[in-house]
Image (cartoon, rainbow, N blue to C red; front, side, top):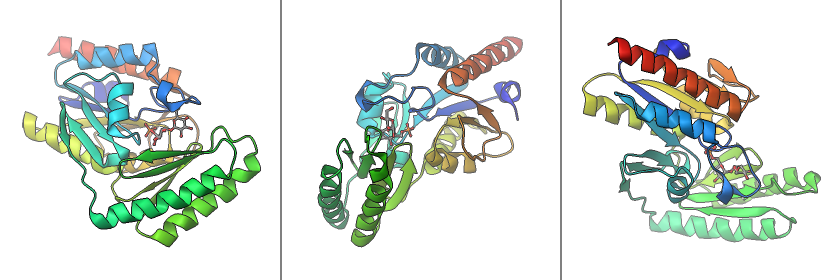
Length: 258
Ligand SMILES: O=P(O)(O)OC[C@H]1O[C@H](O[C@H]2O[C@H](CO)[C@@H](O)[C@H](O)[C@H]2O)[C@H](O)[C@@H](O)[C@@H]1O
């Protein structure tokens, strides 16, 4: 299924990773924003009937709400599938005592490791941690730091590890972006009373879980280089915004015919 094919789907969910897909990677994660071109294409898609745009991200949900400048109709999945917000209704994530205790032990160990490597940074998330190395200038120190972080997580036990772009992440919940996409598709299909086709786009290894739940009537788009199970690829964030505009134009034409 190509872009023009999926544009003709009766009901379409456009599920998007955020960092590296609609927003270029930057040194300060709090300053990330979708490019104006991507934002314009998303607005065009959102204006169409039977068309939904969702963000499915590794970001904590509160950051995702802020960075995507989401309105009350937003469909958001944060923390790699763990946190979900459907049109402002947040399903709260409550850690149990055991999870809290393991988080505290891992935080102590990671804090010590990160403090020892200049410009490494620890991101604290609702269900885990990210060890960021984007700004580490002594790059030889990155692999040993990541290895030590992995060992610390193994020692505490029960963490899912994900290697992303200049980040290694640990989550106390074993949920994926694939679970998030499946949940969104089922929700919309139940609401609308019929099947929903999905276009999913992402740039990182964690997006492969989402590509894995796509079927014959869906479309996976990999943004940038790297191995992927997605069937379509674009070079970068700018090219992906172009694809979103192409999708919006084709869907506008398809809607006009029906
Ligand atoms: O699933 P995503 O929406 O792609 O989020 C993945 C992680 O994104 C953030 O880190 C990455 O983007 C930062 C801003 O461009 C960049 O500085 C960092 O090097 C990247 O790893 C975010 O901080 C993480 O929480 C997300 O899991």
